[in-house]
Image (cartoon, rainbow, N blue to C red; front, side, top):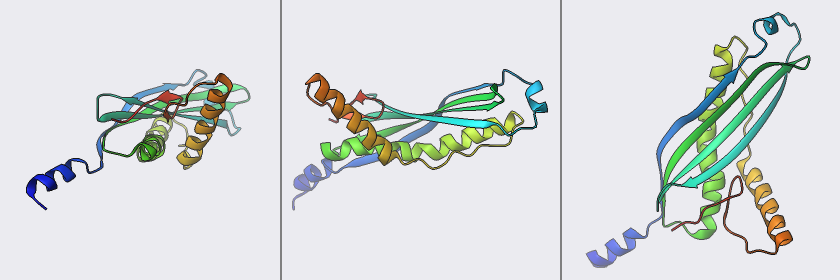
Length: 173
C-alpha cells in the first residue's frame, strides 16, 4: 500500500474524541429554609432527566444531560436542584446507523457520572444529605424517544429525520 493510499484510508477512520466535559448550568433553590430543617420527615424525591444534543460545526457536537431533583416534605419544597452537564465531542466518519446511538447513548453515558457528582455536591452543600442519582439506561431512553418520534412521524405522514435525544434532529457529515 502506498503512502497516498494509506493517508486516504486513514482520513476515513472513525473518530470519536471527548474534547471537554463541563458544568453548563446549575441552579439551587431552598424556598422554605430555615424552617424546612426542623421537619422530621424524610423528603419525597422526584428526579427528571433530559438529554439534548446540538451540532456546533461539521465535526463537533455538544451533548447535554440535565437533571432536575425536587425534594418535598409535606407538600413543601425542601429544595430544587437543576444541573446541566455537557460534553463537547469530535465525531467524524461515523456511519449513519452508528451516529444516532453514539450521540443518544454513548455521549450521555460519558457525561452522566459528572452530573451525578455535581448534583450530590450541591445538595450536600445546602445542608441536606446527598442524593446519589441511580444509573440511567440511556439506551432504553434513546429507544423510547425513537419510538415516540416514529409514532409522531407516522401520525404526521412525514419522513423520519435522525433523532437525537430530546426530539432534536442532527445529521452527521
